[in-house]
Image (cartoon, rainbow, N blue to C red; front, side, top):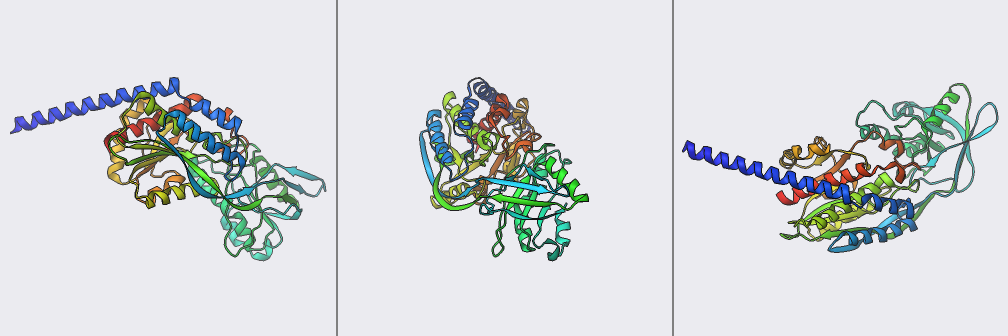
Length: 452
């Protein structure tokens, strides 16, 4: 009996070794194909330079919809379609922010209104600036100290976290809530220090939120250098600021997410890989999230080019409206539920096109451990971190339906230097880093498709 058991274990071990070797060879084939022949970098240049930034509801976004549909067809998708979604329409318009102190001279500051903020209706809005450096400090201010003032939330992006997304998460509450908090105590408008890891003067935009039954006052962001200068002024002088902005919500309109797939040979269970097609209305939306879009299309193209016979349907989703509403992700999840589509897995790339370092896994322990058991296959490609337990914003509706979800984890050190700014351009993306992200995603989808 012992001899039979030992023989069986040996056979299983040999089979496991043979399987690992086969997968390693396929990983290498995928990597060589994408690094040598991948189209993602060329596609990204086309998207960013010929369409540019593409806020949901804008004419540029509608051009991007047609662009994505064509690229998916060219990549070999069996089926491409547009999924209807109602998106909010926000427009920036002209804007300016000026300050003056004891000298009496006015200085124009670099600034950006926060996304979804209401403006001043094109009229000057002026007042005295007061500064707080934390939420707790603001909470201690009585309403009479804030009434008719302009509140400057000067909370710096923490440099202590090695994983910069933690610094972003720590500071994000100031961007999201500054206007509502200021309005509750009677302030005129809010200024925030940008959510930026860089030591420069580039302002960063991003979504903010209003609260019901609270006045919708403006909120703007300034860069780190300007924030430091304003802080020094406020220590010794009374500072007045004047804002003139034309931004605001313009209702909703019908738009689309773009979806393409290659049909499963075994069944129609769906594996989703995606990113968001929209961007903010500054820069070119290269890292956020043009990179994720072209990486996702690269996955589909590589399966077709290499003739990999996928067991399950591999579906690329270019989500609409992640930046200021997540309407595309919500609609996708709603439609999947209504159609009773079985989704095996979903991964999103929405953390920049830098070198991939890992894959974050938001799923039950058995699935996590299975993927983590494949780690040695990924290590030769610089992908080693499988410890994260979060996934992308657009696929949260799928996660809420019980679908295992994941997110590509690139090196994060430079991402928040340029995130949501005029600096997020094609020139900031490195071809090899971008394509290595597509390699890791394709390798993972290959393993999921084969083993689930």
